[in-house]
Length: 361
Image 1 (cartoon, rainbow, N blue to C red):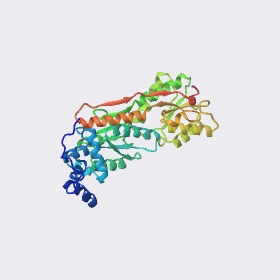
Image 2: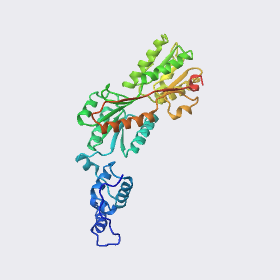
Image 3: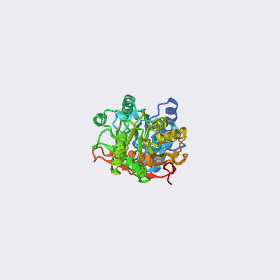
């Protein structure tokens, strides 16, 4: 592709050139203009503007030359002003509820990888499962004119939020959790199937008393619980024990498993809301002098990197957070490019990873 518009070549030896003399003074004053950059790169002002807006109409060679001049002169692009003029900002807001969870670390890495390929950057916010905190972040992102939003809704978020975002004209892709069914865009996995796979595996090993621990009041937990109960019904297993606890952390797993082990009859296997709860459950079993995988089978969800390195290695249902992050980002970019296109739902299939915490390999 050739450059759209070029200016006359600047003679580096001509000390009287207006373009050549203006760039240093602009740099010194801290008020560099697009014309200064154009003169430094020996291109037109309109070409500089296209490069700043990440237009695909500029040849790669020209783009690199302009970017080198921008760096050399120390120019900082005012995206806020550009947004007020109606241009895209090449930024995307990302709101999750627990950035300390390795699942979300992997998901955000996938988001950034996909955005980086398209010249986008993300603004990351951690809601800590607070709808009020989440709302503040979203409003700040709106003030910064992000082109779209990837949202893993906080617990107890008003379902009307996605309608509000639509009224604002802010494309929103719900990730993992959801507040409403289509027509809104969504990227995640089938969490009902996740729980069914876990129960099916444990029932296949002969377990008849299978408990479920961990969870909260949101779509992902509700779907897991539905899958857990449906699978028990399918296997004709009357025992069911669903304990939500207060969160989905190691401590929750550690505390809940010790409570369950005091019951009679006690469970012989537990399905955990996520791998963190499962890690805590295995620690709790050991605290009671019981061996995970022998005295009680433990199965987690997400298959984070630590799962394979556990003692014993944790059987888990892989939900592929990195791939979900990539797919969510690409879905957001498609929606930004085509606001009125057909709504999409991207579902990554879960996968059972069998290890020793269930007493099988």
